[in-house]
Image (cartoon, rainbow, N blue to C red; front, side):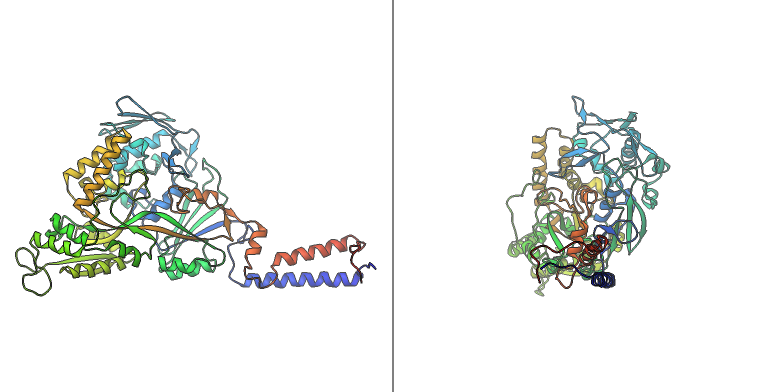
Length: 604
């Protein structure tokens, strides 16, 4: 027998539903909540993606760039002449139209510039801005980017005959435009005031507010706390879904982990291996192991107050062979990486060449090399003296805010002790290390490098032209410098590959620095807040801190259903939207005049 619910019962149920909805929503708001719930922003309309990081900005000035976070901010706020493809990092159009063309002798290149571009302040971006940027770098000899330009003519190497054409004049043939150059294009109407100024003045400019052409613009920076980007309304490319990208800085990895787990941040970058393992498998967390593009090295100093022993090739070889690089991977990276050998990372498959023969860890060979160089233990105390019989001691600097530096340096100190070298270990923060580096007042330090998609930049780092720009210790070897110059001016791809291989082999044999290990980039993000994450390159790439802002352009809030379902992963109670749905159903019953019957199969 079918029946209808009495009006009073319907009213009571509806009232109960409303009360339950209110209770459920109140409980939900009292708990730690994500910035986005059900795909809708919680702060009145603004969609904010929050990145947690252990590394603050060093500078908002592209000509004072130093750290990975600086370059990530430039990818958000600026454009390059050519970008890097998502799938395999092949060059693609950005400000310029790919591909460029060149004269028969390879000395003059022509690049078309996309029309209708604007800076985030509304002013037009034209070929003149690109020419200005490159001429400014070339004529001021700004080492930060000069290697990206090949060998342009001395002055006015770049010209813009019209708003959409860039002409690039080379002193010698060069492949630089096709590399392509990793140089943020800056507006002449902001930076023109620095023409003729010294580089110290250029680097001291705070560049705030930032005027760029990228998808976002830096609007706030609170050193030690974080910095925020807002969407650029004048961006030429696809409009991002998120309104803001906020970077929140944490002073230790445990705090970063907790922020990710409790929803304070949406993603975390460069997570230390132990912390990374502890977030794997956690509810609503996706982890990503990106192929290594960053590597750590033991950098030697060759000028200033450096110990003269470091000029000796046998001494450097001995130091290299006393270090167990696989043990560093296993003990410091917990296996998330590979042993180092070349400054060109293996992830650059086209360019990487493993030097041969790989000598590896061999303390006995290291001892013999030191004996051969005249550094012997002449008094039997277990520690070696200089060839003149004086006490011999080296200092190792470790960088406290580079997470792998201190543990690596401690292990290296022990291995040096095993072959009879007395060392002192000193830990300093990045800013202090920069002062020491600028004064060339050190023996060696453990730090890291990240190269570009083309090997030219990282090979050029170790040339003498980069002394007090990128070079760690002003290594001066004309043979190496000629190799790097030759590969930069060779426009035949096969011939250039041969020279790049030779440079890698020579580097390994001479040890201007010891490449210790290649570290995977360990990343994690919440999958209940945003979707649309992209890895670059597609196979084994990074989600963030990649070669373009592709994930920031593609992420969007998860749907309402997905977000609410994931907000209660443990099944502890009915989600608020379910209660709302039930209440709506009951109210529809009321609105229909209570005339609907239950299905015929429902009986008393």
